[in-house]
Image (cartoon, rainbow, N blue to C red; front, side):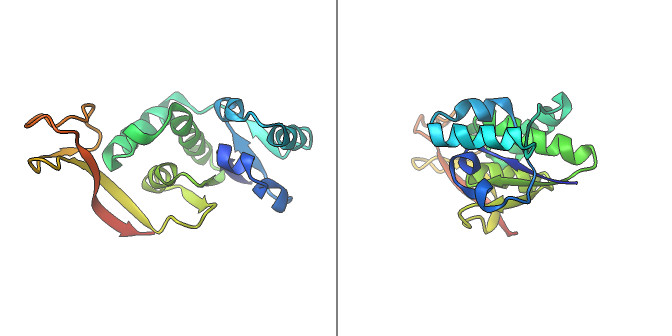
Amino acid sequence: MHINIIDSGALLSQWTLRNPELLFMTTQSVIDEIQNRPSKSRIQNLLSTDRLRIESPDESAIEMTEQKAREVGDYNVLSPEDLELISLALTQKQLGHEVTVVSSDLAVLNTAVALGLRIMDLRGRMKERITWILKCPGCGNEEPEGASNLECPVCGTNMKRKPKRKAKI
């Protein structure tokens, strides 16, 4: 069975309507982000026709996702909902399902690729997997992007997120 793990961007768009043959899965926290009436109506329709399932990720998958997000430097820009969604995809993959993460959020897609998950970028912008670092524009000091402090420990300037390494996907 192939499952498309979808974020709020996919639910807000009409992408699910243009793909009536696909099965979708998401988390309750993603559903809770949706506020507009047309999207809520689409969600109810998908739920009632068993094309959308709401699931929770495994705790070990959450830990693996958070670790990988720190390694590639996306952790500080991913929301808890994003981390949960990627973790759900990882959980489903570990259960033996064929999974694709569907999103327009580049940090979500980047972390998913780093975890070995298949992705679909709704906007077609994801061309490279990036490992990020924090670099001080003042003194040039570099810190891993997973660092918790966005202020340079050397000179106190606000650190900027910069690509350290890129790889075509």
